[in-house]
Image 1 (cartoon, each protein chain N blue to C red):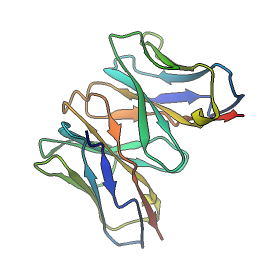
Image 2 (cartoon, chains in turn green, purple):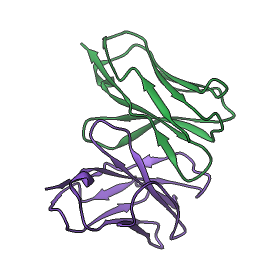
Image 3 (cartoon, rainbow over the protein chains, first blue to last red):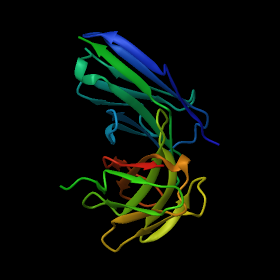
Image 4 (cartoon, each protein chain N blue to C red):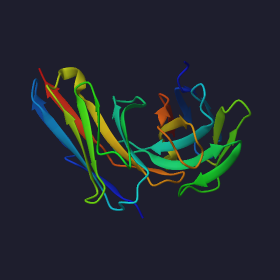
Length: 111
Length: 114
């Protein structure tokens, strides 16, 4: 049974800092992994999708890596801004109909 | 390109009532998945619809049911509401059925059960 864990649960950083959010999963047989952003009370916004054959994906200040053998993914945010404050969720799809989510990391960027 | 839209955005029901939530999938997408998100937790998979049939279900009782229509829009129905059903219900659309591609979510329907 796939389990997804995100550490830390919450993180507070000063503006401008580079930061890394972590996601670990127990079953390395994945189809893809997706990172999302969620603002309070809102839906999920897709940030990056990494297919199982890929090692990383980049979009603007965001870079996501995937290491299936160790069951880990990281989301790197460069030069953080107050507008980056949100909850970040990772989600793992094992090739079937179900996508398993972590509980998220709540990020607060101080101006 | 039209994104995923959900309605209603907020609703309040009492225990034992029934509720229907609606979702219009993103243009070009043929697969709809529903998720329940309790406060402070990650979304939990309820079920997925592809070609108007349920092709996968999470650990939710039969009182959670759904439909997908020929235009790929979908409904989530919950009967005999319980207090624990209070949550944000999220709809996600994708393309590909069983081999799920990138998921795109709507803004959700916030259900409060009193």
